[in-house]
Amino acid sequence: MSTITQTYELRLYVAGQTAKSLVALANLQRICETHLAGQYRIEVIDLLKTPQLAAGDQILALPTLVRRLPEPIKKIIGDLSNEERVLVGLDVQPVNG
Amino acid sequence: MLATEFLVRGAVEFGEPGVFMMFEENAAELTANVRSLGFDLDQLVQQKKIVLDHVHIERSEIEETGEYDLEGLFIRLGHAIDSIGAKRVVLDTVEALFAGLPNHAILRAELRRLFRWLKNRGMTAIITGEKGEGNAITRYGLEEYVADCVITLDHRVHEQISTRRLRVLKYRGSAHGTNEYPFLIGERGFSVLPITSLRLDHAAPAERLSTGIARLDEMLGGQGVFRGSSVLVSGAPGTGKSSIGATFADAACRRGERALLFAYEESSAQIVRNMRSIGLDLEPWVKKGLLQIHASRPALQGLEQHLVGLHDTVQAFRPAVVVVDPISNLTTERSDAEVKPTLMRLIDFLKQQQITTLFTSLTTGGSTASAAEDSQVGVSSLMDTWLLLRNVEFNGERNRTLYVLKARGTAHSNQVREFVLNDAGIALVDVYLGADRVFTGSARVAQAAHERSAAELRREDHERKLRQLASKRKAIEAQIAALNAEGEAEEAEVKFAIAQETLREKTTQQNSADMGQLRGGATTANKATKGKR
Image 1 (tube, chains in turn orange, yellow):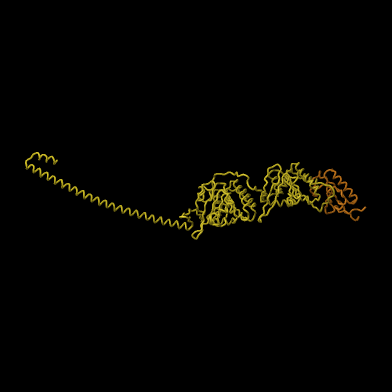
Image 2: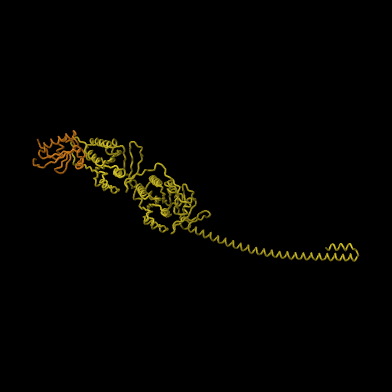
C-alpha cells in the first residue's frame, strides 16, 4: 500500500494554547508520523489570532482538523485521541506494524 | 422569521446592529426569503448593520474523536459581533447543531456556555428551536436552562383555514400576557394582534358625521353618527346594505376625508359600476386618492390575516371612514366564538384611531324582524349604531324599509322609513301609516293618491259649502230688505193713522171750541187756544 503518493494537506484549527489544542496537535503529529510519513503538511491556525478564518472552513467545534487535500474535504473534531477514528476520518490506510 | 424581523428592526429602527447566524439556510437564501417581507438584507450588510453568517454542518464530513468544544462557534460569533458592534444575535436553528454533532452532552454544555457568554457580552439573543414531540417545548429541552423568555409559535388549521399563534411561555422579570395571540406574517413583516385591548379607553369625540343620507342623519338625532363610532347595517339580501356603505364612503370623500372600503363580495370595478346606477360616482374619489377599495374573497385568508390586512391598510392609508362590506362573509366559515373577538379587536383598533366604521352584515333570510335581529346578536353588542334594513313584502311587491334599532348616545327616531334606491341615490321616504300597518312602495303611492283625491274632494266640498253659504246669505239679505220694506210700509201706515187721529182730534176740538163760542163761554175758548199750541 505504499503506492499512495498523495500529499495530505491538513489544517488544524485551535483557539489559543489550550490543553485540548496541545493534545490535539501532539496526537496529530504522532499519527501523521506513523502513517503518513513524508506525505503530509500540517498548518495550525489559531482562531484567536485570525477569527475571520473560522467561516472559511465552517469551523464550529474546536479543535477541528480539516483535510483540505485530497478532496473531498474532511473534518475531524475533537482532540484526536482516538487514533483509529482519526485514520478513518482522514481515510488513511493504517500502516501495519 | 420573528428572529429576522427582530434583527432587521433592531438594525434599522433602534440602531442596534445584529448578527444572524443561521444553520439551515444560507445567506443568499435568507436574503431572498425576507425580501418578500420588504427587508433588504444586502443593503444592511453593506451598511455594516447586519452580519449574516451561515454555519454549515455536514454530518458526513465530520468525525468525532475525543474531547472538543464549540470554541470555534464562539470565535466566529465573537468576530462577527465585534466587526459591527452588534447588540443583537440570532441563532437559527440550534437544532441543526444537534443533528450535525453526535455528542449531545458536549453540545448541551457548550450551548449553555454560549448563552451565558452572550449574556455576559450584553447581547440580546434570539435562539430558535423546533417544538419537541408531545408537550416538550423544544426538542432538546434547551429552554429549561437557557432562556429568559420563551415564545412559542405554532400553526393550527381549523376549518381549512390556518392561523399562526404565538404565546409567551415565560419571560423572567416581566408581567407578560399568558394568552395565545394569533399572529401573521404579512407584507410588512410579523404582526401580533392582542386578543383584545385590555381597557376600553378610547376617546369618544362628540363630533358627528353625516351618513350621506340626509333623512338618515335626521333619524339619528339630526346630525348622523358620532365620529369614531361603529355602525352596523344588517339586512337580508338585496336590502341595500352595500349602497348605504358606498354612500357613507362617498359622503366622507365629499367632506375631503379619506375612506377605505373593504369589499368581500364585489370587485372594486364592479362596485364603482354598480354604484353609478344609484347616482354615486366613486371613480373621481378613487382617482383623487381619497377612496381606496380593497376587494378580496373572504375565504382567501384566515380571519386573522384579514384582520392584519385591515390593520396594515388602515395604518398605511389613515382613513377617517372604513366600510367593511360585509362582515358576515368573514364569519361564514368560522365559529362565532372566533369571530366576535376578532371583530372586537378590529373595532377597538379602529376606535382608537378615531375611525368611523360602517359594517354591513347579511342576515339569513328571515322576514320577521326577530329573526334578523337574532342572527346578529353576536356582533351587534359591539356596535354603537345598528340600522336594520328589511324587505316588506305586501301587495305583490317587496319594498325596502329601514329603521334604527339602536344608536348609542343619540336621540334616534323610532320610525320605520321606506328606503328608496333610485338613480339619484338613496332616499328615505316616510311610510304611510294605515290603520294597523305601514304602506310602502306602490301601496304607499296608492295611499298617497288616495289621500290626495280625498283631499281634492274635501276641497271641492268646502267650495260648494262656501257657495251655498254665499247664496244663503244673499237670500237672507233679500229677506231682510223685504222685511225692512215691510217695516217702512207699516211705519208709514202708522204715521198716517196717527196723523189722521190727530187731525180728527183737532177737528173735534175745533168743533167743540166752535161749539163753546157758539154757546158763549170765553174760558173755554182760551182753553181751546192753549190746547192748540
